[in-house]
Length: 184
Image (tube, rainbow, N blue to C red; front, side, top):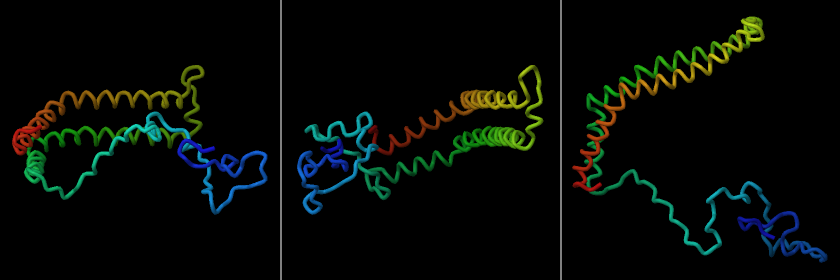
């Protein structure tokens, strides 16, 4: 008996292991392979056409770094032009001005929470109200600060970067469209 990926089962599934015969598998005439359950259970869509006669879909060709096609050098120049533009530099600067302090503050808060929890368990166990202690409030504060940081990042991107980034994308598409002769 063979598994779904055409490997023979190790525990008695081959033709040499038919019940009622004294013959064992012949190592010279038969390829003995192991059964691997990770490869036997195919994921959804993996290998569906294998062995059914369905045509295999070809994999896309790999990108070539040294491609020489019409307008490739000019397209690269267009992207470099946009990257060196003051508008692109401003978008990147706005991104860095928000992300660097936000990530630093969040990591300091997180590491501070972990260090305090491990070095001062008595402080974290101090009751605040009933069964709620400082550690529970700080842990909930971690969740709250994660949501606040996500909201602040999305708001900052929407108000200060998205419009400029879309304009840059449009400019880049226009430049490359002109380089490629109007082809999309």
